[in-house]
Length: 582
Image 1 (tube, one colour):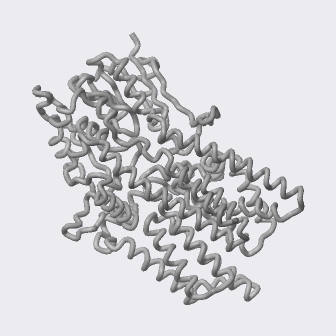
Image 2 (cartoon, helix red, strand yellow; image 1 turned 180 degrees about the horizontal axis):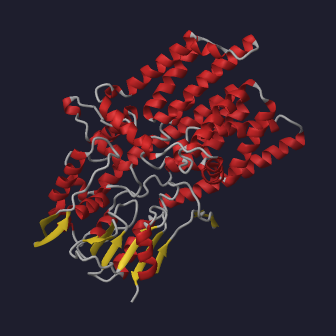
Image 3 (cartoon, rainbow, N blue to C red; image 1 turned 120 degrees about the vertical axis):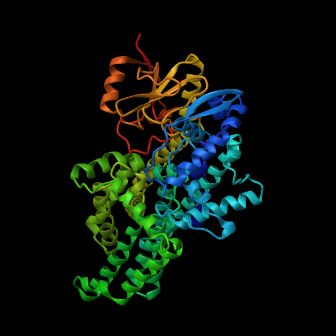
């Protein structure tokens, strides 16, 4: 019977991870907003391709800062010679090729930069490990063999065939979604190993329903993809508590190395090996055997980690400078700034949204219960969780997905306390059952409502349609910086004058004066307005239209909170359109 329940839970995970996985991809509908006819795009194809190649030639690694040339090109569009800046050409190209979700194109750019015909598989990218990149590349190749999509080395093919580009995003996302289901099965094994099958099932159910895991299964990013390797490393760490065979240390090290090789922060799981080893030795000697971490078993585990890391990132040895520059760039994105206020923010905002309040409350109760019990397994989990929690509180506390590697272990604590409730008297069993049902149903509805954001028409497309219908031809439209699919809707640049704010003044197409544009478009949850621009907007503009959408389903609405993790509003940023005052 428990196997049947596990299958149902895995199917629920598969459904929630893939429902709406097609959201935000390039489409013909978006293409129609950007041009009056396909000939305009055909005429710009060559210059769009050339500017893309120019930008990529300057980038040493994804995220490497670069300047888009602001010089102008004379191009023939629909039989007319017009002047367009490379800045706007780059924006137009990004709307044709990218999804509405940020950074996904970076994965495709890295894969596209390889040359399999010459056996060149060097990604020149190490923020996302090679195993993840190769997995996406292989999946795309298999899909093309079975005619599920068209792969072309000519990027201009996708300018007029956005549905083919969309298929690439869907397949790439599906790989992560399936790995999320695998993670559900592995946490079941961990729950069984730590406690019993009942706790294993509840752990699997909670992970299958966890909103943040479901949300990031919809993006072509490796955060969910990496969870099975992280959990396998922890699984063998737990086995060390009962048996210190060399194989447990080596397998734990191997999977920790793979996890670290895909996303370096996932290498934190190696701490679980050390903690499990110390608990094992302390139990034998009745004192903390700190120097036992220098034993041969730990050494072998460390060697296994480094070996596995190199296996999944073989080119890091020949591209060491690229890797160093990339990791230096990433380390500068978040400075170490610990404070209790940051930890409280992470708990109050990031975790409450990433789990949902009811599931988070269960986790807190489970944590308190483990502090009370203080058995070997409790010490392992708590000693692993608390340093990670405080590390995130000092670094990426505003980003729920960067710390996703910690969340499954919190789930185990919550599942344990409910699982033990089922082993008590009749009344407590019924209370545990009611709590389990209420928490599970609420979290399922919450996650499904968030999934609906991916299923429904993207808010950037909706607002773009409104602009195309309600803003008069020839009007000037301003953006906070270069228009990108993630940040705001772009309209037809052949019908409107596109402007952007840079430094302390307006720059623009076809109109180089620094007078304010007639309209201004802002995605509130994406960009913070510079003080100078904020003054301009407040004094010279009035709001004419606002697009904002909260997750909802079955008539139940989960109102958007003012404070939320930075990436949480990716599928539904608030788009505000202003018009200059008369």
